[in-house]
Length: 152
Figure: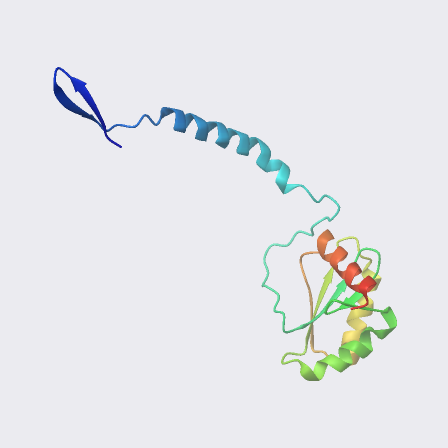
């Protein structure tokens, strides 16, 4: 941005921009974000994440059994009664490339609920069972409940 100024009959060009006010605004915004950012990390205190040291990502091509903390079972996001898990897994096994079941459970889920899934998977013919290292988030539990209420 050039400004021409008149001084003693000669033209002078002013082509400098003062960035000090802009820098001040950015510093204030940075400080505000540093103060607010930690509150975004702990929005959902209802789910207690289990601690794991390492792991692999979960592929969507596998049979997934989800268990909420209140004991509701979902096979690939479809609500299933505890007695029908084995039948659902048996019907799925022929369409899967790998005979593998992934169990996703909340940290507060009882071990007996996970044992039911293990027994059902073994009886259905699955060769491998993986217990995921992260629980269902509150949003995922709510989505599953909404799907159940809508009858999907």
